[in-house]
Image 1: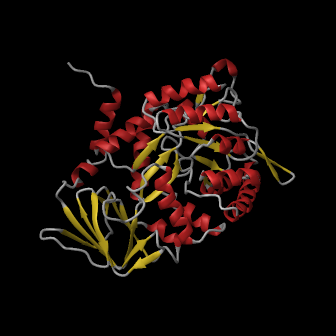
Image 2 (image 1 turned 60 degrees about the vertical axis):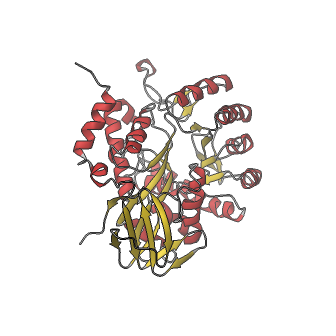
Image 3 (image 1 turned 90 degrees about the vertical axis):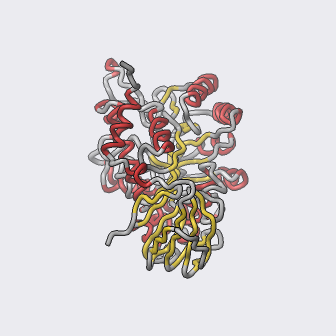
Length: 433
């Protein structure tokens, strides 16, 4: 009897559990759909077309405008008083995390269990309108996100397009090591160890072998505030990060860092990483480097807000509020300095499918709705290396399209109420009766 790998078995099982959702709705290469709505967002020009229509054939957009061709036999979907717009992008997610004690999930839950939960999280994100995401580490589940990404790409399960990093990389005793446990128990870390440039190169090569699209490195932590300044020890020197960036670039790939403050953020910017995620506090020189090299900051306000209300420790709430206040204050300085922004929520420790709150918070702390939309859709497509493929409604682009009630240029919170989702020409969600 032929034996199949467990990953294949549980993906097939999930296809049944999820009702074969994507297979049942798969559009053939000749299937033609016309989408009609009261409005259509031109995110590049920052304007609305009224009304708006999109002609889709197979997985691609063919035509966009106030009116488009209606070929014979085309399926017409009239979305009424809604705004058609590109599918949302979340540039910082964790499919393998869920609300609860984050450090214990690796200990208490098996990798197969966490992988099944990751597929459910991917479905929830897609149904919330996020058609593309960047998974910033499985937090101890190794390269299991490769299986999830590939299953989505095959159409076995519903989910966003994914760029994945596998396990993140960390130093011994660093930010994601198993600190606070009995050392005799040898509790595993939530990231792969690399303690110098040579080890970084070795780990990076192994991660690419296992299917990673990019590399995620923990550069700073833990965080504290002293006299109004963020204190966060760095984990890798500039030379070590440069070695990592060179190794990734050798095979056409890039490095992103978890980095909240100095000097780690400056080391990362000088090394030429693709993004500085969290970026609580940046020096003038770091901001200059990021602006000139077009390195994105990914603020992740939603996770900070969530931890204020749901602290991980008994007395953690006030500390988290202090960090959030500092972050909001520094964010305004970063905007004034011209630091490029992308949108990422750090969803996982808070429920998947709720991360559109990030748009609301970025507007609250200083950006206009249009600027946030451009940061998400145009910058996000660049950050995920899908520029020219997603993030705008243009002929030739992938048909990743959502619809929201109201006008997102006036009320960004409407992105929390996505009620139509198409990804690659396949309709995954329609408005209710």
